[in-house]
Amino acid sequence: MQTELKTNKLIEQDKEHLWHAMSRYNEKASPMIATKGEGAWFTDINGDKYMDGVSGLWCLNLGHGRKEIVDAAYEQMMNLSYFPLTLSHIPAIQLSTKISELLQGSYTTFFSNSGSEANETAFKIARQYHTQNGNQGKYKFISRYRAYHGSTLGALSATAQANRRMKYDPAVPGFIHVPPPYSYRSLFGENAKNSDLLAADYIEQVINWEGADTVAGVILEPFISGGGVIIPSNEYLKRVAEICKKYDVLLIVDEVVSGFGRTGKMFGFMHSEGVQPDIVTMAKGLTSGYLPLGATAVSSKIYEKFKENGSNNHLRHISTYGGHPASCAVALKNIEIIENENIVERVSQLGKTILGELHDLIELDKVGEVRGVGFLYGIELVEDKVSKTPVSEEFMGAIIAACKNKGLIIGRNGDTVPGYNNVLIIAPPLSSTEEDLRFVVDTVKTVLYQLC
Ligand code: PLP
Image 1 (cartoon, rainbow, N blue to C red):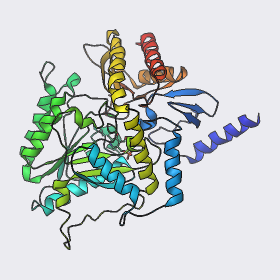
Image 2 (cartoon, helix red, strand yellow; image 1 turned 180 degrees about the vertical axis):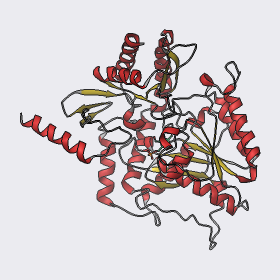
Image 3 (tube, rainbow, N blue to C red; image 1 turned 45 degrees about the vertical axis):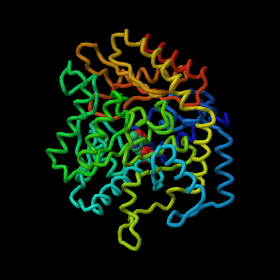
Image 4 (cartoon, protein in one colour; image 1 turned 30 degrees about the vertical axis):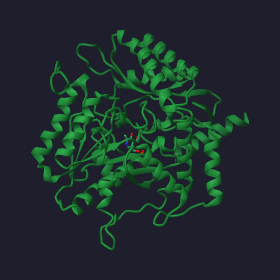
């Protein structure tokens, strides 16, 4: 009785005072209040257990309760609780060095607190780089429809998802959108071959149409994640990288979701041999969500232009908490675990098996396509395979609710394009046990076989 009263009170306070991200206000629905996490699972305030099939917000890559990570934060906070990066501290030096090593190039990193900030930082660095390189007019950025790059106004301007933007436009000037490499709904014709490469060539056209001397950079995720798990061939990024190089346009790769093993490589761009981005942005999996941290790594070619001693060429950018010592210590421990436990290789191997199993669902009338890479899967649901009409929001809601009733949390592409929120998204923690993964696959299959 006492517990029930306490729970009801918390729900009341939640409804009154806590503003939930992305959620419509719903007087009748009770919020899901988590109280405890263990590995890939969490328990809610009613004592019900759930497998987190989306790793929180695709970030809880090593699952809950890794003592080594918590200890790293504790020790760092006891030793040096805060220090700004206008000066320096050891965890930040070590982490920036480690990031450069992982990126297999020579990179210098600016730290912030989130993926949005990491992308904002990238835009400012890119514009300033071109100015200091004698190309003052190069200020525009190209990104793809359906992409999500963050919630702050610059990152939201790169985000080309109408529903997320419509109440906040006009966006920041200078952001241009191009078609995604979306073969299932290709803009280049139903039967176009290599439509992902046509989408890459379209970027070249746009650079020419806009004037190459006005374009600063192309920003993209190696695989569009939140916009519906869109997986081009590995050739796509290679082609985009070649185009960027040809026109002195910086290739900014957003690895906020795909970084640190999610796709079965340490970074998503590494699926495309020979691609070496000019700028790489990171967050989420960098700390497995244990503490906030964003990172913008720039290649030496760019950093050179900020190095002239005594000049006025430094970056006018600062973040009080960016590169917090505890966050950096957590990131270092997180990366150490990923390496010691061969997480990336594990995701690559197991990921293929899971995708194979999910692919069986294609025989269902309402399953249009099953896509995936590593531990990132999208199941696109349609009314029928010929018209490809997206299923309704209500239908998507019913599938997600049925999974939840069975103890599995999965997601969908939210607020991407009006009427096209029809891709189920599954992205379990990279450390999920084989039993956990079995549960995910079996539950999704059971529900879809029942409802599709
Ligand atoms: N970039 C991508 C690809 C993302 O998916 C996200 C968040 O989901 C962001 C950037 C923004 O990250 P944050 O929410 O940490 O600001």
